[in-house]
Length: 394
Image 1 (cartoon, rainbow, N blue to C red):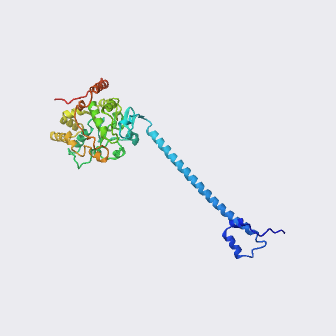
Image 2: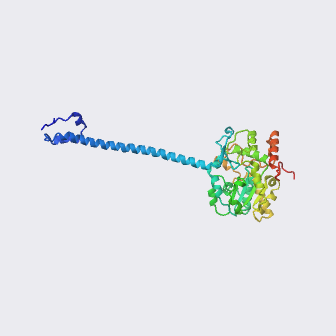
Image 3: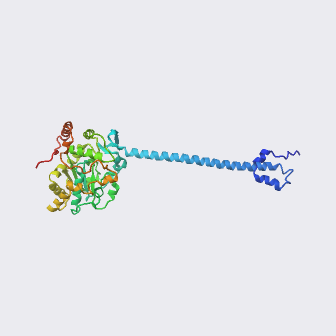
């Protein structure tokens, strides 16, 4: 029988595992018919080891690819879900173009069922929750278009319903005592969970109040103010808020106001919605000018509406404690803490600025007054509503 050479190729030897070479050293008799099997054994071992490494590498590669692919798929899924959520959130809203140069902050506005709302409210999802909010019979709501005297009425209501006790620096701030229904803080869910009588502020038009209001027998007080003074007060308020940081001219703001492009507009639709419901026994419609002209009379009217038994001394005391001067100096209602919290600029005046009737005369140009008069006549025609634009001499 032919026997192949016993010499092992160097390259094959170099590949073999060290322990194979050890066999040769320990068993030098491994010659003859046995030696041809050594190279095969060496190569088999190397081949087995190479296959194991290859499999390990394949598994590692497959794991890395799977992990990377899974991450991409998960990211895509989250993005898709976020997109679907945003689409559902904005389904009934239309984002409106604004002149960004007029604002020192990132401001967005949306139109919803005919009204203008800030993007902050829209993105909070509150409009999805509002229809499910349940009013209760013991609730008291103060509603208004912004800058119409909301804070004034809130504090009057709170004193009348809390044993005529005056609030001060040791009291909870007004936004905690009298939460803002549609604002993200403290939030509609927190308000819904609150026990006992609730005191609620809102700037929503009547048509957008939660449907439960109609059957709840909750009490609602609406305060309106002449649009010229509202516009002036609103202008300063938009400059004060860091979330808006309005930096445009006064005339630019007046144009926006008359075009019903500021938050919670249209102004007249807002006011007239509540005006037409004034005969509802659970709605009390008041004007800022009435309250300014005869505060004692209006405070007494509010007490009667809320079924609060208040004598003359108590009514006079509430009136004195809620005068503009008293409230302006009261840390629990003057919103000066907003400056420390970063919600208001420290160099743009105060939240409670003037509290006057007819301050518009110091701001509006002749052309702007004409524009207001035309706008007012058009919207008040055949409504039975009229405004007082100057302080009465009576």
